[in-house]
Image 1 (cartoon, rainbow, N blue to C red):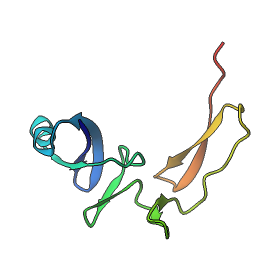
Image 2 (cartoon, rainbow, N blue to C red):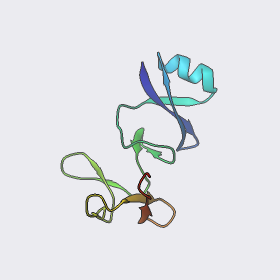
Image 3 (cartoon, helix red, strand yellow):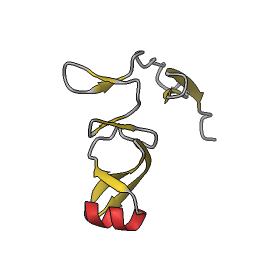
Image 4 (spheres, rainbow, N blue to C red):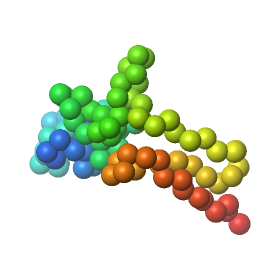
Length: 100
């Protein structure tokens, strides 16, 4: 089975798994585009029939989508990770408490 992005307007509103694009569109009633790209998530944007992870990201010389600001790094085991905020075009730092 393949992964399909459900498109409304030019924004990915859902990601589903289906046997074909036709079935995905039949289930959702919306335009669906196949995506093997792991960067594509809800909120990604369709531009010129290409799915961008976020509207502000650009293709680098290796044809990989990159943010306008490099992702911060954290010390391993710190419980912190970065999540792109498409509204502010910055990275949010998320703190995860260790499991008991």
